[in-house]
Length: 379
Image 1 (cartoon, rainbow, N blue to C red):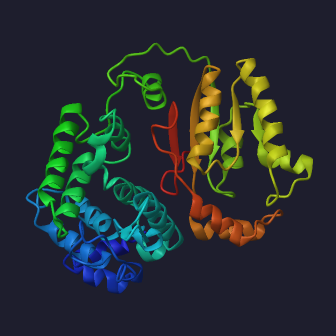
Image 2 (image 1 turned 45 degrees about the horizontal axis):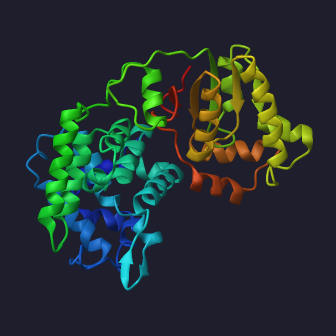
Image 3 (image 1 turned 90 degrees about the vertical axis):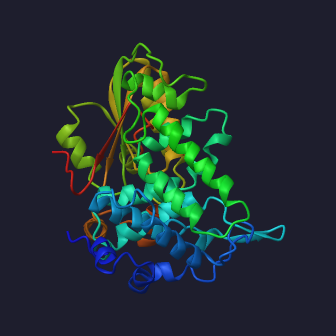
């Protein structure tokens, strides 16, 4: 697949203005207001253009690989895309709560639905989405009680050395009353990331069990080495409807019992769009029976929301299971095509709403997380 937007970024000399002409989503940043105390330069469009310009003159910019430059510029161009939908006035000030979280989802959905226009691989899309998600981390990480926790979590998804450059450009690409203090915090982030050994790669935990426990238990030191006392495996499927979860289970399920919410829904006569309380309750009863017997099984459902996955992961792990999240994805047009042929057709507004809510599993969520994307079939 052609890398259309990355090709345009380089051919246009890394010009944010030229990019916004080709991709009108960026033009929508115009007239989105910001708090003048931190953004005296004006609206989000002005700020973003300044960020992109500052990125190009950072001392470490020239030392980056070609692909890293393109992805970092792409992340800078879209880093505040979430502000379009969440900016509001409160107590006389303009605020944009959770714009990084929203921005990650907006960018992912945009690229997923317009794959031919953007031309990004799955890896490129997710790298950019996570840079958008975490671009504010270097400024506020030090306010947390466990200062290293969010750094280690972010390092599971992106190189912190790239996040540092994005955040540095974000601070310099504005007119703020106290820019020096913000830059000091970003430098502190860099120093701490290097000290933790996660500047270029994720932290090397003692084993997968220790890694899982660190991200799910309070007050566990990241350098601990816990004894792995897990006893059996549970595979938690994840992905949009029609992504191929049933086919994957048929090929790789090794005959393990399968708790399928779709199958239970059919047995109970509950339509896909109706309340699924009875369906989940029935599935939970089946799961607890297997969990008490320490028997491996597969939980087959969409599980596209992180909170939903985490409740299930913690339940299964509480019985001594090694929980493996298996995420599957197919291209958007393939998804629509499969839906047209499906006997139990999903209304497109329902499918689009699921795409809007989608939260991809991240490496810290379970004992093991595997992604099966269009470039990585897993076969």
